[in-house]
Length: 94
Image (cartoon, rainbow, N blue to C red; front, side):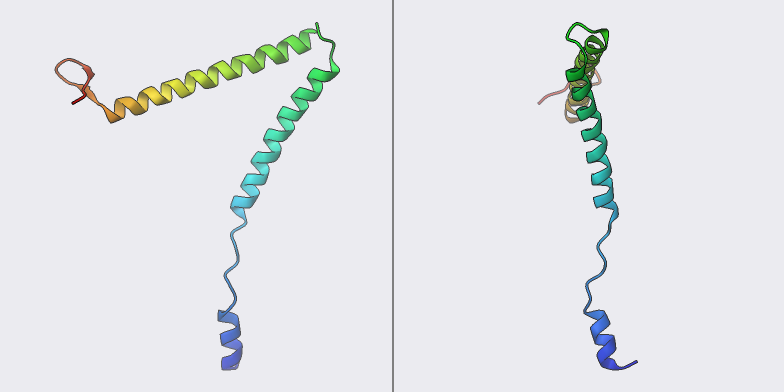
């Protein structure tokens, strides 16, 4: 092996990791496929169908649960920022 060959090999950039791109693509297509399929199904079933009502009600329940979960997370984060006062068991704020 020549010194020139060793220099050429060391000048090559390291290979880029492919896992982040694959993870992104997987999540993207899972989200796209589920939302697109739901919307397409909503368009195909009659307006007063139990299927359409079920899809609508399930979507609304998911939105409410997400909002509830976010509110709980914000509360937990605020309690971590202002831990309860041990004497009064109320959030301590100076």
